[in-house]
Length: 107
Image 1: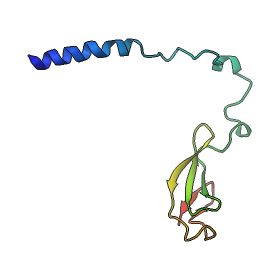
Image 2: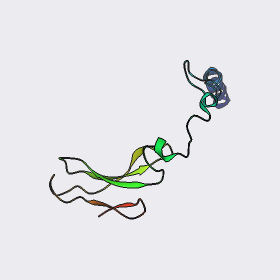
Image 3: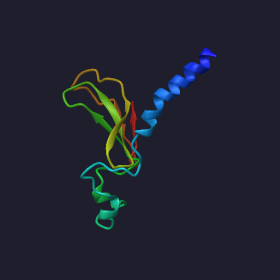
Image 4: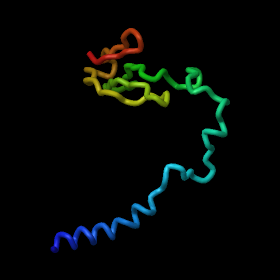
């Protein structure tokens, strides 16, 4: 019986949080809707993207030992995919390589 009372108290406590949650159709003040910019920019136009989605790249920190792989996400922005082993020195050879067809790999 005490367990049921605790569940009921928890449900009553959490109910206002669920009712106050934002909905998908609520937009922040000053936001521009997608409908207002339809036709102005093509989503598939590669010139509007920072990179080609699905592409990988080898990156190494300038003056540092770290090397990593980055992947281009669906939004056309680079994000870290994997960390490669550290270089032996800041001027040492890179520990990743760019391959064919927008691929990259750690060595």
